[in-house]
Image (cartoon, helix red, strand yellow):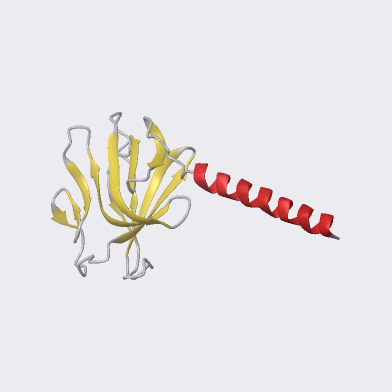
Length: 156
């Protein structure tokens, strides 16, 4: 009986050591950005996507300050922007949604940020769907969808 108790304690001790070891050495994934259409999400809570969004042969950069990743390509962001190849701001997601410096629509201020979803098809980014977020990171408005093509942005 005493041998069984000692063996059980040894097994519990070994399992505890294994668990502590796994917790100590496990780290969150750090995805690095590469040219192309793969979103890069890192510990600094930034999202960066480099692609030819305007389909004009030059690369644009979408970057956002993330509050929380909600799904595969869905994020609760504080703010973001789409920069053209010449670093001009094409789309700004700040307190208000702006296209080339002009308010896109008459909206409430985005004090809690936005929920965004990047939609791809055939390994190209096709749409950016945007909602206002509430204080819990939930959709708090109708959506606006931006379709990426040569007439960027087309909004629905």
